[in-house]
Image 1 (spheres, one colour):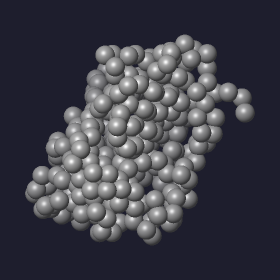
Image 2 (cartoon, rainbow, N blue to C red):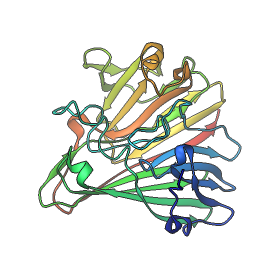
Image 3 (tube, helix red, strand yellow):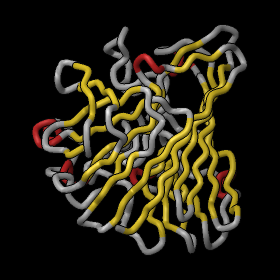
Image 4 (tube, rainbow, N blue to C red):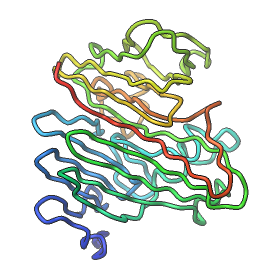
Length: 301
């Protein structure tokens, strides 16, 4: 296979710390090995696929059956959903989760800032994207890899008319056993239960996953904490400029219907997704920008 790694990308490498290499399926990726962490990020989808702080287990889940091919999304890590979430309401033939999840992003810069590795990628509207969504946009994705992981998505309306979009940092977290993992979120939050005819419900107490779970928590800016007794750690997921949070675990039946999900891998993952979806979609006038951000950190139990 001809290398997909360009010389221009290689010039951004930091010797001994950051390499641009061929990853799975020959897709180019940024590989980070620093005193603070080990991490990987693919240009395919602008996709963070691994983050392991020094002295810790891997934090992100990645399916063993993920398809590493152009035109297919990577199953796991932190996919970027834009400009719609899940199915496109007015076009069932459109790709799930938008137009940039399977697109090759531009690698713009890599910098070492006091031991934290900052990687910037970008994507913008093109002929392929306009087939499904005619708006003009520019996206900038910034990921900062260190003892903490920060990911932010900046959206610019590059057109002459207003636009409205949904977005999500569709993060998959690796856990020791989902059946004993607990997610802590403030009480009395309302959520849409997509597994129960989209009924509106209210959360009381910790979230315990005991069946297929697909929820959209509404009008929340709060941090979520994953308590993982198997790995003896807590993962805290904070966010900015995000008013919805999606929680997802396919459980056994749904997982078996997904060709890019390994058997019983649902036991070792949960999605916690900072987002702006449904009634909390974002509107931008021409030239305006919006930035959504998540900060992930690990705390020992």
